[in-house]
Amino acid sequence: MLSGCSCEVTYADVSHHEEFRKVVGSRYEIIGEVDAYGIGRHSRAPADYLTLIPRPGIGGSEVVFEAPVPKGATVTVTKVFQTNRIVFESGITLEVELHGAGLPLRGRTLIDLNRGSEGPGPAGLNPEIYKKL
Image (tube, rainbow, N blue to C red; front, side, top):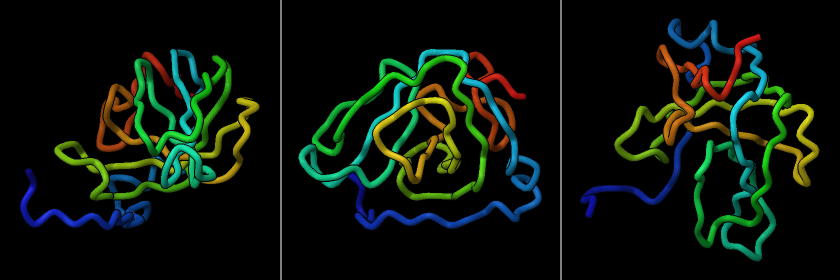
């Protein structure tokens, strides 16, 4: 149990901070097994956003759909957020543009730097899954 934990998710844009400035604009090719999850308030609600997670992935009532992301698809980092959504992890989430995936939802796409997505540096992606271009 987490005492004093707020249920409201917050995202603070830290893209302008020195340690994250060079991350914005970075492009990566997906070379590993990654799934896209449409996340909503519950499984019958419309998806509010996509999140990209290496396999084995996640499940739960908030997952609206799950789809594999084809190898060769690319992501471009557009923002870096500090968030309270990731408990006991770095708390860093990347907002990215996803290209070449052919998924049913366009809009906000996030990569949390946990569950195997995290790589070197303060906001790096796992080089076994994401190849820097």
